[in-house]
Amino acid sequence: MLSDHLLDEHLDRVDYYSLLGVARDANAAQIRDAFHRFALRYHPDQHVDVPGEAVRVLRIFKRGSEGYRVLLDPVLRARYDAALTRGEVRLTPDAERKAVVQESRVVAAVEAPLPADVAPLFERAADAFKRGDLKNAKAFLLLVSRKSSHPRVQSLTREILEAERAALRTRR
Image (cartoon, rainbow, N blue to C red):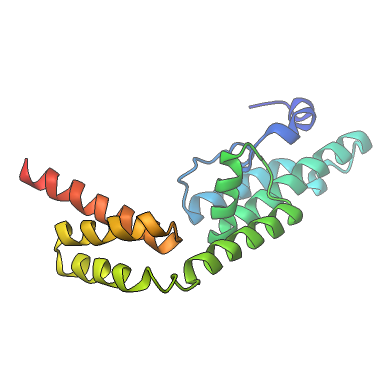
């Protein structure tokens, strides 16, 4: 474990999981327990005797509280995990707003109607897929994908490919 001085110096490079000492797949109870241990060590009330130490510990405690809030909220945690893959170790309010805007764009794209010339073919592909007819689903989807890269088309393509892989695995 880093000393308080080193932790404070490197705080902007420490992710919430490391700061609280939990695994990335930790459940809510594990996160609460870890934060309880963290708070016992870094709560500002524990360090009122030494003024310089109190300021340093307050900074660490605030960051840990931020991490606790984010990791306990499933939506914020998913956003944070996505931010971590981009190398961002914090989910600041500004980053949260950006994530919400990005998610709303994705939802809008998925909910946008398919082009008129593509919709009937897409529906036939989706119907064939629902019936388990992967061959026809794939054929119709091939026609659709030549005309459109709509998110719904991409999603159905992934589902069909996954179903094909699963079918191959069961044959072996």
